[in-house]
Image (tube, rainbow, N blue to C red):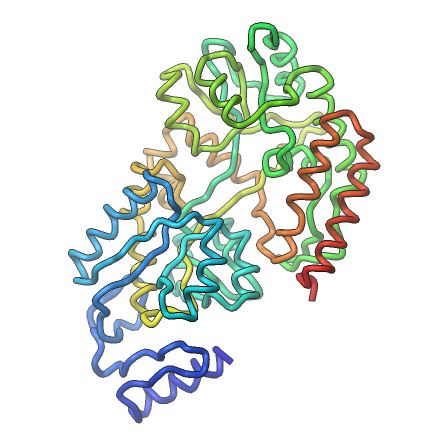
Amino acid sequence: MKKWLGMLFAALLMIGALAACGPDESGQESEGNADSGDTTETEGNTEGEMPEKPEKLTVWMNAEEKQEEALKTITDKYTEEKGIEVEIIPISMLDQIEKLDVEGPAGNGPDIIFQPHDRIGDLVLKGLVDPVNLGDKKDEYTETAIDAVTYEGDVWGYPAVTETYALFYNKSLVEEAPKTMEDLMAIAERDTKKGEDKYGFLMEGANFYFTYPFFSGYGAYVFGNENGNYDIDDIGLNNEGAVKGGKLIQSWFENGYIPQDLTPDIMNGLVKEGKVSTVINGPWMVREYQEALGDDLAAAPLPKLENGKNPKSFVGVKSYMLSYYSENKEWAEDLMAFITNSENAMTYYDMAGEMPARKDSIEDPAIADDEIMSAFAEQATYGEPMPGIPAMQQVWEPINNALTFISKGEPVDEVLDEAVQIIKDNIAASGAGQ
């Protein structure tokens, strides 16, 4: 329906039959006549012809202070250059989908939302977003980022942030980064002194997001993937490689390297107190760790597994996405292109500490010559995007529960078999496989 309306609208513009169109049955107003538009060069429109400028564009941004401040700095420049006010409304990314589903049809939604790529399938299924046209700018973003925001042949966002995790280590406790899992386990054995709250190796061992590399590195996978097309009937989380990875993870708990009651807050507190030799975590913790450890903080890619392979971490891409209900789609795309251009991507990186999704940003000396951030950039090259399909939402809870059981010594193969069956049942019940 939306595509048909778009084709009709384009035809109407070409023949100049209407100066403006009213709302259609979806509640979405069409754009005005291009004759009344702004013909100045824009970031997001390669044709150079734009509709009349709106007074305001609205962005729903993740409710995190540094991210909000960074975006405000960037959009203030946009307002100065384009004369369009940008309203930033902080809303948790977790809450944006449900809120847009309610506020969008009522005319109270934003023009732009900020979302991780693994929710794209759900957003598309609900009809809450429109695809975007990156044009020639597509080549400016990393291949992983473009792959992540592509769904069913369309691109659904302007990539802003690429993130994965790596291995932090404390140079006052570890002379050099462990290159293999054998090296890492030797550090865990040597430095773990539970009675003193000291640990050689920590991570969220019952969190599938962080433990995925130790499954995938042995040949496990979430869904079968053929050239970007996922087969949700082919779940590889209980195959031979998955069982091997599960037994490795279980050994960390059995050996006392990772305590059962470990929470992210406890873990990060121990790291900042200088009581942890190595920890797997994401770049969002760099600033906080640095404030506590100073020059003792370092990072490296995840150590190679015993099979000689680099663990394949999940790569997440956060992007700015176009609300289906926006009445200013061309200008919303112009703003998204502006926010993620070369200069502003680095502004966001400097202020929010999140790695850009641009090729030139990764090559910028501020990242390439940074010992810590370059480690995350390298690990991202070994990783793979989380599946951005609706069925992925049915995976997290069962597999995280399975990891909890594994951490407590339950049989790995039986636990994974049960988790995969629950995932299949959940997918069928949710309709995500239709």
